[in-house]
Image 1 (cartoon, rainbow, N blue to C red):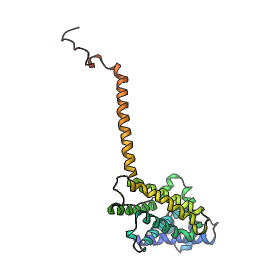
Image 2: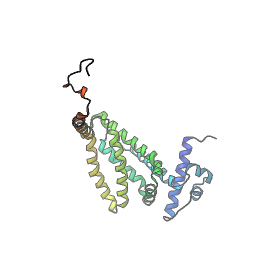
Image 3: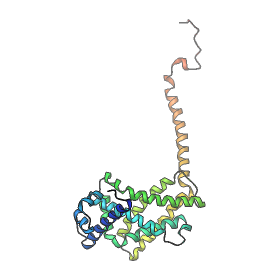
Image 4: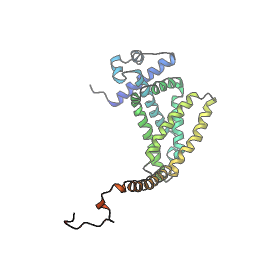
Length: 249
């Protein structure tokens, strides 16, 4: 029988929730997928279809938290009128609020993700796509309202934001300040700098400079190479050499 998309999401969430609960009960646990399935009340064979191993549970956990953070933004009054900086900050704060109750599990899950082989990191792509889609919407809104100029390089900046988000979470996991005030201060200061890049048209200006340098240096290099190989040109290619008369030896 075909399982609906909603049902699949419910089963995946139930398994992830069971893994979090097992870790909360015993932070040192190395529970198997069979134990996770039993905790969720789901047949092991079914659980393995969704998550062949525990590392994929970790990836799914972050995927769901990104979804929940995005949903939380929709409950903020007047959110549509926020600036790009305010929207990004609200998203970061919503994401951290979602994972706060399971901070120790987040630490373990993130280690599991970052310690995985590079090919396994592809499993993080669903969450990465979610984050990039959310941020793309913020950028599109900012362009539409005229607070940042349109640019073909916005995608590059949005991709950079994903790396920035990971670094913020890693910092937060090591932040022992009261109410994580150091993390809040880091976000305030670094996000302000980050947002100035698309606002100032930084990437377009950098691309123009790079294009100018490539063009001018390439032209100069071509001239130098032309001069270098000039002695090797056939004599009849030299316009200063008179053409031979037909039949002359």
